[in-house]
Length: 297
Image 1: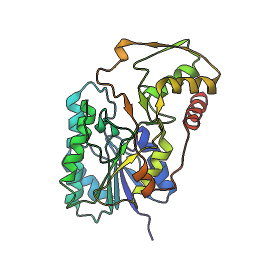
Image 2: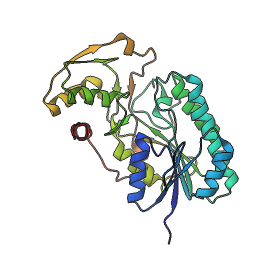
Image 3: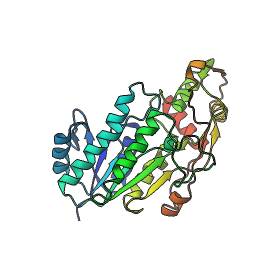
């Protein structure tokens, strides 16, 4: 029996690279959707170009779709671009999938735990009412609502990943920035709010969750990708200091303090664990140690 084909958007991105590798290891054929210069296992199409998307989908004829392509940086300066890519790009993809008439078995859309805003209770379950406080989160919530109008035509499942990191993440993100400072043995690091509490999960766990959700979970489901383990930012700094044997001075830079910063964001993993009871589990030390070793290599 030929391998099932997964259309993977965002295959060149941080998460996409790990998801692609995990899919291939699981025996799937992966067709990446990219904007430029496709390799042999990729097709070029822009999410803003519906005719090109239709052509790409008809060429790939996927059995499954994992849609990761998005603007994922919360502080992205172009707010209009957030909506064009995260909402209308997804709309075009769903339209192209529907027009293809392919007998799709699952379409996974990556949303974000940021849609919960500053929730009144923690950990946050999927039933918690969304209350986004920035345009990135709002664009993801709008994407979810838009996509739900397609549930009668496409077998969509939504994921809401909480913060995760790993080797190869761009250093505009917080944890790679911290790792880089320790790897360079810098004297100091400037950070924003130090009292925030976040999950800092491992991208390898997240990648496995995407692969497994292709055949688990029901149409219309929403699943938090989380562990329920929260860490203060200073805990991360102290852990990297212990792992690296280096100490640096932490300074708060007012320019890095966000006005609408989420104070605590920890998810309830109950639903994820019920659907996928044996996902790999990485401690914060596991992930940070792996990242340190990768930067030093």
